[in-house]
Image (cartoon, rainbow, N blue to C red; front, side, top):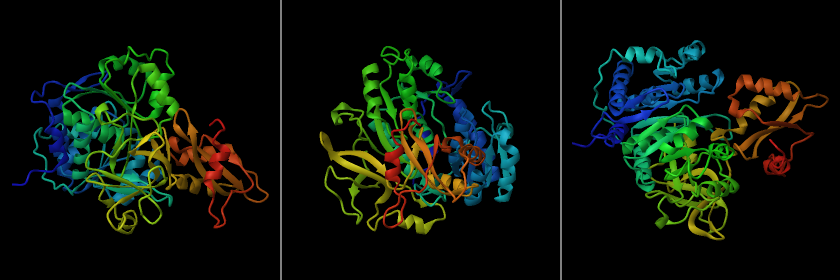
Length: 511
């Protein structure tokens, strides 16, 4: 009989034989492996009573161990997990629910009124609540369910999760990730980063995101390693728990803020064997300052919603050095190439389009077959939309450096920001003729969102009113740090806005 490819079964194979040990530690309590196993079984049994395998479960809740159990329960029940950023507002969530048509939505009690409204409009039959303190109808109803369940049989190409991403069109796309995609990436990273059962992961990342949910959590679960589970980066808490940890993962912002505290010393993190940085560009100055302070080199890697992790600087020094400004070689089993506009490979040291191929690459975009076809080459390579270089001066030929994003994506504080969405919101505001949104370098966030606005003839633009309007419509991480008003946007001979000119003009101004 063919083995079950359900991702939960793959992860649970790594749980320790003694389920009494601590799996997750929070400042308030400890959760054993038995708690994780039985708790996720209860939720999975509840979900199975509400939806059939393959149905979507959309989740917008605050980080908690119970939220992780909900994710594991969705896998276990054969459902498709759809995590949503907790910062999303009603109009954003309404689009996701309307597009994905989930059978079940789980939200924070504080948002129940409006989420229930948009969920009903999307045809969702069941809306449950889960708060950060484990309160809400999800856990109350799950408490009456059985605490045992064999993972529902899944094939490797069955969907496990949908992550919404976007492009320059402004319309979000649901990246379909299979059980095989996620399992292959987790197993590869476990080996490549040397995960061990005695590891202790300091987990401060959000879990609606690839980095926190898939990269960090999967690694610990697959290895039977303990997680110290904090809701977000809190420097005081991080400094308290670092001496007891062996791994930490974060966005560059985390490391900048730790370096900004004099208490962050070499002695404090002497027990850490690996610091991983990702989800946003890491400035070389931060890399150098971190090494000088701690004696350790940050490990930078490269991934995206559609693929999980593609490349990584080596953990094992025998495989090569960790080089600042690069994201390392392709991970085992994954192939990366850099090509020209005709999809032909370019020479080392030459900038081109980054394409990837491997078992980690997603199944396509939800209900967008034409868009899916456009994003793959005739010979099966995924077009990442990033611009990169293999090799270069003093860099091995198989190391990749990301130099830009042809899809215009901004990554601020580890979160994806899509300029078109913000531009569409600004362009309909009073007095605005048009706008352009760009990302500029920022020491803390990696990139900061900046808007450049052109007023209508004879009109005056109120930048404060624009910001106020955006704060009603969009998540806070999408709000521009600056708004500049100019007479006209720079354009090329084809009429395309030259955002590179705007980046040069505003990139050196404090954001």
